[in-house]
Length: 95
Image (cartoon, rainbow, N blue to C red; front, top):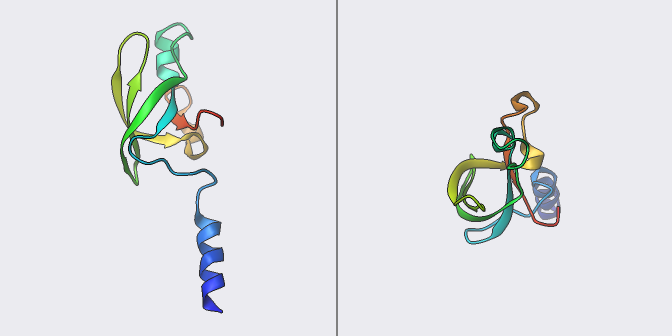
């Protein structure tokens, strides 16, 4: 009976969203870009996952003004409220 308890514990600690894999397409948002572009440039931008680790995702962002790379991007549900105005995050396109 130890197996069901392990499964329950794993489910309780798992994030509420599916983790992306390298090559997946997600949406990228950046509050700082919104400020720099007069509230026009914050996203969503299409982004491809290029690397994944415990610090977040590395993303290649495809934006109308040119592409760029962002590192350590966390899911929207993992944002720290103390970072207001400086947040960047990813989410699934239909979130």
